[in-house]
Amino acid sequence: TCSLHPETKFLIHSKRIVTPNGMIAGTVEVSEGKIVSISVNDGDLNADLLPILDFENCVIMPGLIDVHTHLNEPGRADWEGFDTGTRAAAAGGLTTLIDMPLNSYPTTVTKETLEMKVQAARNKLYVDVGFWGGLTPDNAHNSSALTELLDAGALGLKSFMCPSGINDFPMTDENDIKASLPVLAMYKRPILVHSEVPQPSEEQEFSLEQRRKYSTYLNTRPATWEREAVSKLVNLASDTIVGGSAEGAHIHIVHLSDSGETLNLIKEAKVRGFKLSVETCPHYLSFSVENIPDGDTRFKCAPPLRSEENRKKLWNALINGDIDFLSSDHSPAPPELKLLEAGDFLGAWGGISSLQLVLPITWTHAKENGVPLEVISKWWSSMPAKFANLQNKGSIEVGKDADFVVWDPETSFDVNEDFQIFHKHKITPYSGSRLFGRVIATFVRGQMVYHEGHHALSPCGRPILASVTENSVGHHFI
Ligand SMILES: NC(=O)NC(NC(N)=O)C(=O)[O-]
Ligand SMILES: [Zn+2]
Ligand SMILES: [Zn+2]
Image (tube, rainbow, N blue to C red):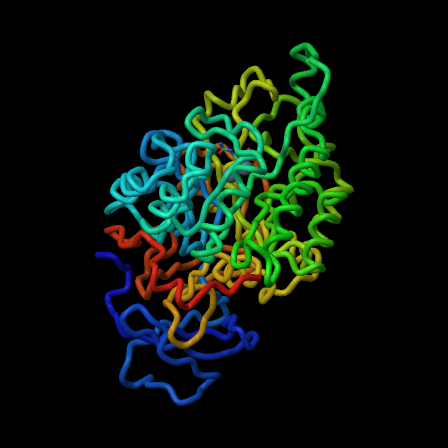
């Protein structure tokens, strides 16, 4: 009942399979959830012996890995939850998510709260889900608390350099983050940082008319917030160089929006060998402030969407490899919190809902920019797997988990009432868009968890917990 395809040993074939050695026409042999052989074209198949799923001209890629999802359970399952969130993932071709430690209640900041989260996820997962632990001022200076959280399986830590909007997830400053680095270095696991530091500004009163403009909101969170945060993080990252006091630690900047000076700081730090990486999200590549309708708070997120010029530079940075990979930052909330009627950008909850759509959104833009499928796969599978040290995932190679998305890049669809969104709440700023790339089927460890609008009867995704034995193998950071 975990799979819409009854066999555990089978062949999957198509004319376009994305492998680390490029695109091939061929066949992948799956046995007990693993990839056991790959043959090019009509190579030596066990075709007479094993059932074959022939996807013809559709593309088979490694399942997508989203290292930045807010699933919000336990405590705020009315915002999303493991069931709806992982169904949406499966329908979107994502096979692994890593859940953020905030927006759930309690927040995931101790061994016990991580165990509660894993317990809450039981029998609800349609894809595999790992967990980041939270770094707050309460645990940052307590290395045994951090050790417990990492021993319990948190894949790394996440913190905010500005208020997170969640009371039991207070912000950290650079000293808090610095204190966590020796522990993280020992475990070779990353710290992910929401990189905005509030800058002094004049108290201002805005009329509702002004509050309905995205530009008003944008002006309250200028690029200097990101620049300030990243400059502090770059300083800390200098200790991560080979021979440095925090060698083995790794700082990751989540959801970069500013492609100006902030990006330059990141590029310089990388040149100097600091262990620093950066993601951006489809919404920063899709939207710009010039095109956001007044009052349309579905677009509110932090850091904010910026200018069209900034958006284009962000694309170039991604294409050039200055940005390492993509994540969704799927952060939904009940529609009431978006204050859609008033259209008040300052009062609305920030967070964009997009999980199920990230592959078609990315591909629609990539196609226009001449970016090939292999590169999409790098941004969404191999690089995120490497970053999070998911050694069994991220590519179609012998020995890896049989996590696949089968999709048709040539077909387009409209995000309208006829398109089934599996998120708990259907509001998304992508409504009304025409996107290329229809997901046909999704496989998680050989199980067909989604096919043409239908999910498997039971959820057989697994929680992914870091194990201490994995550490001996070590992280292979970007
Ligand atoms: N509490 C949140 O989910 N915040 C998120 N909100 C956004 N991105 O607007 C985030 O990742 O910062
Ligand atoms: Zn954030
Ligand atoms: Zn987030």
